[in-house]
Each structure stands twice: as C-alpha cells, then as structure tokens.
Length: 131
Image (cartoon, rainbow, N blue to C red; front, side, top):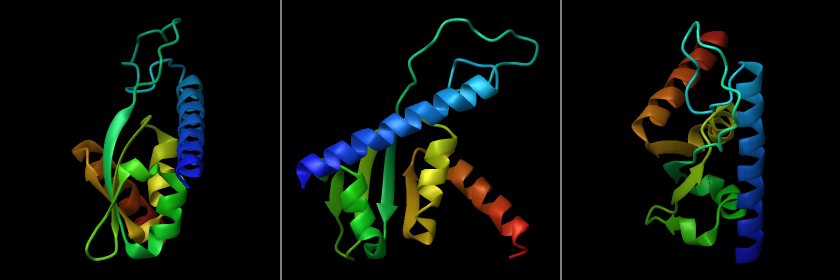
C-alpha cells in the first residue's frame, strides 16, 4: 500500500506542476507563485515551481480517496474516523480543483491564504447555482 500511495502522490504532484506551468504560460508568466505586476514583461528564465505545505482535514467518507492519493506517512487517522493530511503541492488552479473535488468532505486547515481562496471559489460556485 505504501508504494502505491507514494506513486499516486508523486503522480498528483507531477500533474499539479504541469498545470501550474501551463497556467503561468497562458498568463505570460514563468513564476507560478504570483502574477506579474501590470506593465512588467514576463521573465525569460524558468523557475522551479515552489511547493506549499498544506494541512487538510477529510471526513471518513473520503477515506478511500485519501488513502489512494496521499502517502501513509502524511496521513493521521482521527478519533471521529476522519483524516488529517500534511502534504506539499504546487499552488495553482489544479490544487484548487483537486481540493474542491472532495466537496464537503475536505477542509483546508493551513495555510490561511489557501483556506480563504477555497472559500472564495466555493462562494463563486454558490452564486453560479443560485444556492
């Protein structure tokens, strides 16, 4: 199980890195962390994407996905049957979508800026569906 989790976790990071690079390229940037300031030219040098440490909480219902997506050493089983996960991913659109794909079964605990970002995206979704 450990090898499978590590492989899937590594694959998820590879996808996240590729999407972050694509998002940056579409925006005319090479820095995947922050958008370029208006009026500045895109940087010519490629920078490695920076990883962001995350702390996530999942409900028991998301258990199979959590155990498939994350390495065993990154997962703590909680008394209520849920899971707490510490992992690192490249910030960007892929990460937002990945977290939102768990619906109400996932909650960002850290970092605060990502928690606020997910909340903002959820609010946009709520407005689209007139909820």
